[in-house]
Image 1 (tube, rainbow, N blue to C red):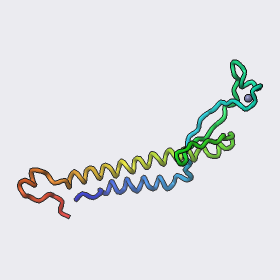
Image 2: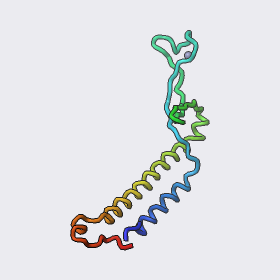
Image 3: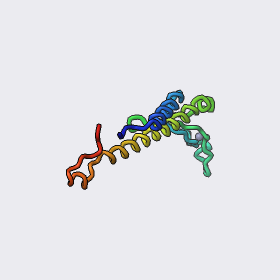
Image 4: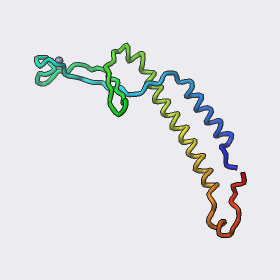
Length: 128
Ligand SMILES: [Zn+2]
């Protein structure tokens, strides 16, 4: 019998339950950014330049395009945990995938007919 074990089913349930408790999941990452403005007489164009910032920039990819927004400290405190949730969601998804991969690899290795067996005409152990 090659199906997932009780432990594997339980591990899968625990991971999905953790995913279910996460709350809002916001994609993207934060960058601290210093910028120049449009006024060429501004100190941000002086030598050496005194750039504006730092600003917190939230960046994500949407349809292969980078989308960026400048966040206030208030927005940062409101949404930071949502970004953290997204990271956790990706970690949990990776664990779910790793679990499934390990089951597939084991089960398919068990189901694969052995060359020696086939040459002797015997049955493989897949008896379901
Ligand atoms: Zn400026």
